[in-house]
Length: 487
Image (cartoon, rainbow, N blue to C red):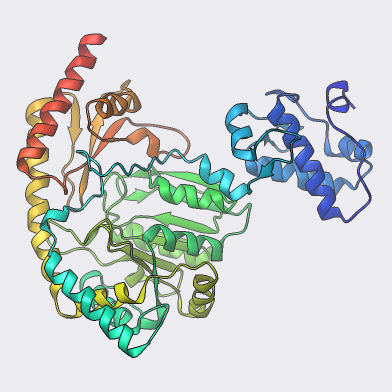
């Protein structure tokens, strides 16, 4: 046993079951890494040597090392001894223990620690800033109609005393809309109503994934999904894109779950064509992989009719279809939904109850009326015209002011566009400079899982009128010009 390890870790363990021994070994090795006693690059002894010194079974030590590898504390390569990974000690200590070591400090779970490492930042300062992606324009929403629906739903539920996790009327109305406009194939009982699309993604991940399972996500892709998948303990791999979306050719690994946005890829805006969709479905069917199809803003399609959802092409029951009302209506309407395979409906309803992923009955009732009466479809048609105009306005303004510095492909739909920067640019620094002058743009590089191949800005256009777009682009141009002068 190397002297560094023997002098760092208490090698004596009380006899007990292997599960508790594994946890003790894991905790002691983790603590030594967090404290810096086992530094970055230190090569641990082999599992055989560790087992001899700990006086435990070799499988017990291997399980502890595997857990540390999943958490990112060590790097394991087949045929070589584990190596202590590059970790930021202060961040991990803050994420692992509340209080001071040795003072009865309270620990938080692996799940909470993983979520806390997410680089997704949420702001709630009471104002929206151009050009924050994914925001609807609340000024254009039919508030009076919606308020009337809420009042009637609240009164109706109070008088009837009816309570349900998944409101039958909402299931029926929403399914009719999705069948007509998105081409899904399902019956109403397969619709699970959640507090957001993010909540639906988390429910599906919890049901499908175990710690250590392999999950694929598009790269670049939706960071919120990556956070959820990593929090389950899954091994998340970013899959590069080509012109048709997820690049499947040549892949030999077998994921348990694939997250994708085929109708409007996030954040590039690409559409996955039918041939690639069929290839993806055949791949999932062959190996028994689940697919989460996030159809986050495909209600807004500017060029022709929207393409049929991937779920509508699935004949094997592998696709989970996820959507949200926060994009199509208002951000404050925290309602999402998922269409789950027929054989899993009962499982999801039980998981939904046990995790309290429940939307209030009045909100569900109001949504049911809003959709059934045609107000939802009318609102979508109106906002599609408005958002198309705003997309064109932002595209033309960017081309006029900073066209030589940004490459823009106008999206066929949605609420945001991607402006690519020149090679060698620093999109994170540019986004930080824009934040200093009261603007918001998401850097493209933050959307990659693994190797970063592009730099750019993800810009929303839905929530701002023409004058606001023009002013925002002028400010963006000023910031970019200042950065060029500083080079």
